[in-house]
Amino acid sequence: MEPEGCSDPVRVAIASLVKLINLMGAEMLVGRHRDDVDAFEQSVRAKLYAHVEGASPADTAAGVALAHSLIEPVLANLRERVRQTEAASLPPFAAPPFANRRLN
Image (cartoon, one colour):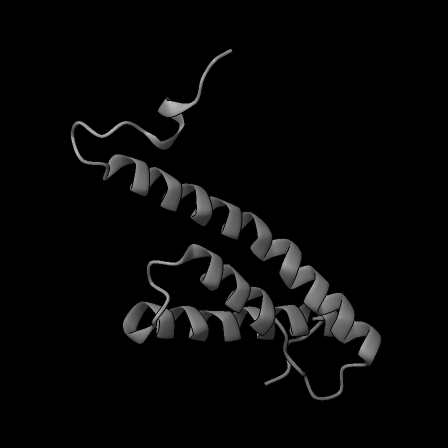
């Protein structure tokens, strides 16, 4: 199925993101890194690539760059959500990690 009017870089970006959905589903269902945002981000960046038959190397590079530009804000948001979740799950009388720093 060839999309009408869809450039090769866009096709590569979409294929890369579809592969990421597969990675994320596997991590959510059976993954070892459910509690490690650093490992998850590293896996996403390493797997964000796709070969699309007929796409030139330049179009492939442009598509992968587009996919990365689309996924980076998502990763930043996930990292912040993990940080907020971890902060909210501190024991009731535990000081936040930054509370022990001296002000002067």
